[in-house]
Image (cartoon, rainbow, N blue to C red; front, side, top):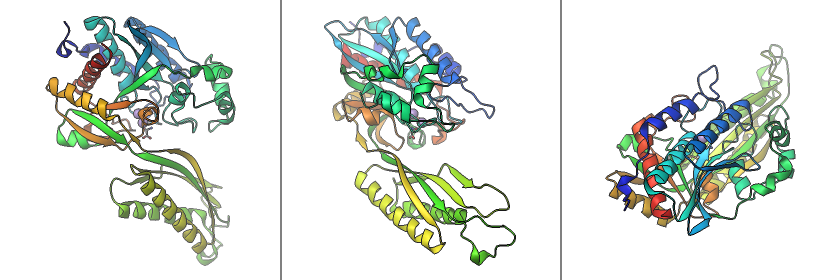
Length: 414
Ligand code: HGY
Ligand code: MN
Ligand code: MN
């Protein structure tokens, strides 16, 4: 009889795959740029599809481009336990965010097939087509597709910075936007995601595995500050309506308000555009993004209301107008307590150290958790670095995470 300690993933294969996927989309600066339906995305999905086939899984792609590898079950074969993560990256991203959950998921299913044979319940690994919102503000587009939360109409409306509609991107990679609704699934019972922590907790404490308790909620906004263009040399300082100076005051205020609220509130301004963009013209318009997160939805909403109020006061003081547009909101999510316990017990039985921790980063699991019992396994991120080329997790930790995933899936499906 198989016991969980008989189940282990191949370290050589995982190491090789992390490196191979880790160069697909590598830009001149070194980081990865692998955006929804671009050439790197295409190459990456082909690569992982090949690995799924090599593992002897039944492979298919759905209508939005999610790639699945299935290990069919025997007695309860119609229902599925799904694992996986996203194949896309942020701009200049690292090679572990998302990729580890796919590579680790394939390794886990391959190990289970080899060591334990066919499961009772079907197991699937998925390379999710999009999570980051890097190319279009379609965050979690792949998981939304599987959950029936997107539509053909949305693919016509959503465009990238060059005005290309998702529908046209899809056609270019051989997907039919009219078929988007067929990506919806009703057979998924659980979602389990392996991911790098992307923060410093596990690395600082030397704990091997994180059992995720919940995921912070977030809102993305676009703030547009409007002033008046004037000559940089001839306009006295007291006659200016400088949009960038207003935006800068707002940025400092947002940092202050968030710090005063205390941890775990976080606010990030990652994008700023100034128009007309001349060195010698006072800024007419400054547009910046705001990413604000907190695990308590009411606290997040209160902070956003406070920030909006201060923005209006700053705008008035500078003779400016400010417009705030909501781009995306994802409420906080709780991971399933039964699955957290199962993961903790499995770590104990494997002699692996673990601790419970919340996720500050957003994940596909955040959406899945509203629909099916969901859990996340974290492995350490060296220095807590992520969303940059420096993102790194030693192979030994990646292998340990994938082995924990395989053992948890074994307990759930066999
Ligand atoms: O933004 C996030 O937290 C995630 O990495 N998409
Ligand atoms: Mn990310
Ligand atoms: Mn991720």
